[in-house]
Image (cartoon, rainbow, N blue to C red):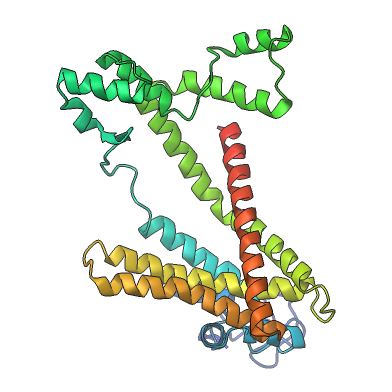
Length: 344
């Protein structure tokens, strides 16, 4: 029940039915004044997301303290007492990425030290002529470079747009002449690299391109996690294919709760890392190590409690599952990086 004032009129604002008490007997809408304060709107939004009536904190407490308990409760049908796993994932991932992008991301405008072949720009600039010639000979197969040649060499070597073609027209003419035989994807990448190299010229242009690419990738990271979740659940279904009582939804719900737990621990880890900027005590490093180990310990306990297998089988399957997760993560990183590169 809300704390808004009850209307004197006895007609429902939603369906216009006659009302005898605070709630409409036809549609269930509460018969209160429609004018709301901003605070009521905010609390109503928060309540709708979390069911802020004890379910949220009960669910979080059980998630942290009893690994594997919540997915088992969902599987056997006891669901009304806890926050829906999909709603919980949406809420926690929203909070996680909001804090990640708002407070834990380093600003691109922060000054940095640029490393070039083991030396910083300042160290290279401070070299005398003999030291500079020896240094450039060491990084250029024994051939020393002038300062101007070194700048070109550095820009080319550090470039993410390495291509030997100067223009798209030159590349297309070589394709038509049959001198090069690239497949469709390679052609797409080459043309994009050529056009971007002309757009982002020089070291500053490369930095601007890299910044744009990282920014785009960062905003697509939540999508990558959402895609990885059903793939994670799919591999669980392969590992436990003999257990007929576990369908794909059971594996998906287990995966959701595990992801939510990892979100929460990562927030704690990021907070401690932020704290290390002001206090770099050994105890903080020890806590970070324990939290990282704790994620794997929690995963093992959750899998053993939920799937009811022995310790040896559980650890083996956890290892295989994490190897699969590493594989699909690398695959998704490569796919999204390539997709965003082509989209630039």
